[in-house]
Length: 556
Ligand code: ACM
Image 1 (cartoon, rainbow, N blue to C red):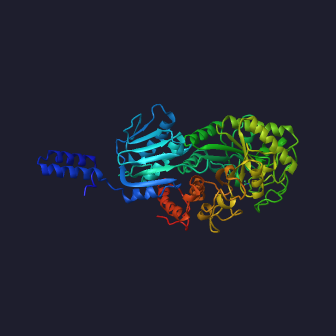
Image 2: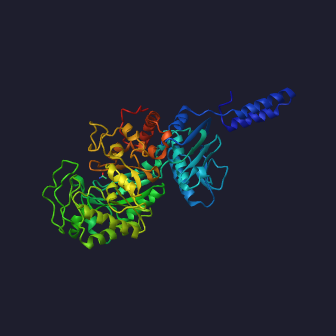
Image 3: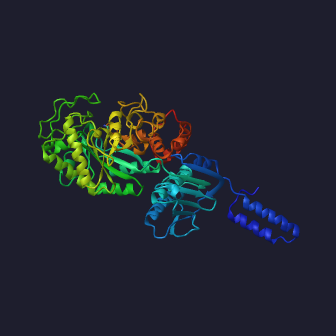
């Protein structure tokens, strides 16, 4: 009877009750007041749905039947002097302001604020976990580390109606169902790779990519910065790499590259969203853009022998050893190689990785190592062993595709499984950490089905349920689960040209991979995922995301 109306209504009713004088009325008034207190406003169906549709599925979430309503004067408060928490609060306030038109103030140390972000000590939350408590009066996010606070704010965004994603004013009310969410990830490596070499994507597109993955609590952006078709990062000691090697792309477009300043900007933008950038320079194969820029590095590239694609445009175009090659705009793989017997090649690698290390705060450098089909096996092993020392010399940890297992690798190395179980197991046997990127499940450039216009299909057709229904802990039998760092979904860009293309191939599969990386196996269930994804489709529309309307998802 009393579940409608706000605090002002309740107060006036209370004064009325107090004014009553007879004994009977006093008894009645106490009864009325108790009823008033125990009664709370119910959440709207929309708020309930939002609470039930969180992606990735939280470790635990308990809805309590009340509602919190955002007000014009709402305040977000953080611990006094905590800069990182204030930066997270600022991002949250910006997000809330756009659609609501509300002021949303930022304060420090105000424990009565509408939103409180607090650093606490709670061993059950780990490095990235958070607790989000919503009562009708207040939203509290607590975590051991700022990363947890950030993830709590991403969950909070999802608890509001999808209208909150609008960049222009929308009519409220802005409600969140009350309850408690306690949440932390299964894996520490929850990544996606963007290939900016086959087609170049500018800084703003990369920032959008970071927005998308971080919203779903992914924390690694692997940038594939070089390949046969393009070199995409300025290297000051080898300027022709970017200038010439970056001057084209698949199909012959003008390509492009990031200046070191732009790269730093991407890294900082990612860091503010708790995403670590892992730069990859693909070595010793996939290297034509460098060989075209500096002929002395050319180890004698040859006609393709077992490429994945049927493109034969490389036949006959390849140069002699130590002579510059032509720039390449096709999509064949496995035909170029760095020159092993020249010390100059290792100086090149050290200079490039040294400059990258200096502008990459994250602990990893990725050296590629895949599909070096025209590098002799003994040369390949020499390369990997020397790359390992070079990366260590620059105080970073080496990551490489599974083929690096052929080198002398150990527990300081990270190997990325993509196709060949034998190499991935060999890497694990040598003690390396493993990232799971099975191409049959999570290569996001694969077509959804035979009718998909974009993408390739050499690994598989990957519908959303295929991307969802697998488990990193069991996908490689015999590998000790303690060696598995997590998951990564690569987006190769042979056919991907625009941000719309990226979005179409990412959604709704990237969210499947985000959930696999975050949610424990017991909390993952396709029937639940597809319903929650169907609801996120509305949010993606508001966000302007051009997603694939998979027939396997019941879209709302
Ligand atoms: C790869 O797909 N060549 C790692």
